[in-house]
Structures are given as structure tokens and as C-alpha cells.
Image 1: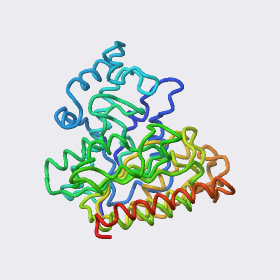
Image 2 (image 1 turned 90 degrees about the vertical axis):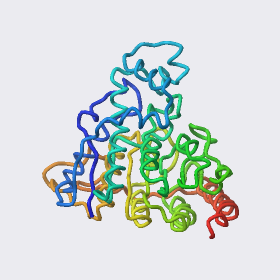
Image 3 (image 1 turned 45 degrees about the vertical axis):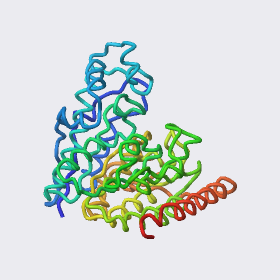
Image 4 (image 1 turned 135 degrees about the vertical axis):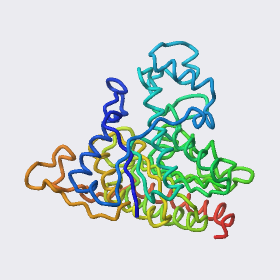
Length: 377
């Protein structure tokens, strides 16, 4: 087994602006925790700095007009033209250096994909990847370049018969990736997310199952507010595992957004790091080659803990705090004991749990009826 963590301290210090919820510093905190828990020094591991994606790779998805606009946005010059491309909004502000930063974030995902394709790596985790909302001609949802689509299309260019499964665990629907591959049967896209009735991007209904040759290869699993570890596990085991097993992908791309966790300020799901790790274990069991990406997560410290657990899980390591007894663990969660990466167990109760359970059972029944037969299930 060979694995690589894609990481840059410089990228982690990039600032989206005062009050903006997206904080690249999460990557630094996750890296520090991985180091603290002895998750970086094993002989099969590498830590690789991201390299900027090539312009032509970006052009395989984004329009030339948009990329030119992004370059102007990186100079901090506001205009109506930039607003037409979603640049200069509250979610996607004009930030000096955002063009270069975004190309490095995308380049980290392309680099990881390339090394998995050549057999140099079995697992890779780009802490600064996972921008699943980016569209061909505009930015949205904190996403300036869609590194996921760029990397998958680069892989398809190298191997036209390559089968890729994409699993999106972010609390927000992966609309940019869905739109890119809605009619492509070579890419199985699955998104588990909080229902679009409640949060941006207001999409991701179970009825959106692809079109043309891609019918049955796009799967959305919307979750009600309050959905907890039990409901998430039920959804994953009922739908994700059997469909991916039937699809038999060559590579699995996993967007491991941590905004599903109980304390996230932008969402309403109630998962814990314990359930999050179980999900990563299941993902690892579904394919021998995995490209993992960061994505959402707006509770800085709980996100860092979740990504540390994800890296440990991909590498089949039980993390041990090498500084236990020497420093406290309060900054990574005030309820945690020293040395713990795990949350206290939590389950939703009462009417919210009943509603969330009833709704996921309805979604599972619908997808089993409409999609399973298309996969021979």
C-alpha cells in the first residue's frame, strides 16, 4: 500500500476574508493532528505539495471567459462582468491571489489522480480539494475551480474506458459534479446531503437519476435536518455500498466534507466523528484505489479531527496521541478528553428522528425501485 497526503502550509494560510466561513487553516490543523497522532512517518506514506493545474486541464471543464475573469478577480478589481461569473459575491469574494490558489488546489487533485492512475499510489488525500459546486462559467458556494471534474476529465482523457465512482459526503449537494457527468455512464456520482429544501444549493432530489446513457448513474440521497449516525449508516448501507459494488469502479473519488457533523454552523445534520469514520471505512472497502478530498466543514477543529480520522482510516492505522499527558486537547473540542479524536455518542430523538427516518426510508424505496434494476440489482 502506498499513500500520499497532499498538503501545503502556505495554502493553509490563505485567507478568504474576515467573517468568511471557508477557512483553509483547517488543513494546517489537520496536518498538525496527523503529526501528533503519528500518522505521517510510516514508510509507505508521502506528503506531497500541490502543483498548479495546467491551464488546458482547467479548460476541459471551465470556459476560457470564466478563467480570464478569475484572473481579474485575483487582482481584486470589481466589475459587472465579474459578477456575471459569480465573482465578487459574498460567497465568492474578490481575493488577491485566488486564481493562483485555486489552480494549486485543483492541481493537488490532478496530481493525486495522476499518481493513482500510474500505480504509484493506492490512496491519496488532498486536504485542499473538493470544490464540488464550481460550474463551467461561474463560481458559487466558495468554489472557484471544480478540481473534482477537472481531475476526472483528465483521467478520462488518459483512459477513455476508465470507470470512476464519485461519492460526495458533504452536507451540501454536489451540483457541479452532477451537472458535469449527468449523461456519462463512465462516472457514477452519488451525493448524500442535507435536503435542498433547507440549504444551498437547493437541489439534489432523489428523482435526478441521470439522463440518456447516464440514466441510473446519478444518485442523490437527501437527508432531513437532524439525521444522525444511524440514519446516515442506513442510507449508505442500503444504497451506496450495493450500487458501487455492482458498478465495480477502477477508482473511487470521495469528497469527505465534514459539514455533516453536529456542530457545523452552516448545516443541520447531527453526525459525529464516530459515524464519519465508519463511512470512510465503508468507502475504503469498496475500491482498492481511492482519491479523497476535503470539501466542506466550518467547525474548524472538529473538521480537523474528522480529516485526521479519515487519513488514519485510509491507512488502516489506529491513531495514538503521541503527546498525551503533555498537552491538552481542548482546542480540538472542549468536550473531548486528552488524546481523543472521537465525539461522545449522539443520536437524534423525538419527532425530528421519526421524520428523518421516515423520509430516508421513502428515498431508499424510491431509488431501489428506479435505479437498482438499471444496475442489475
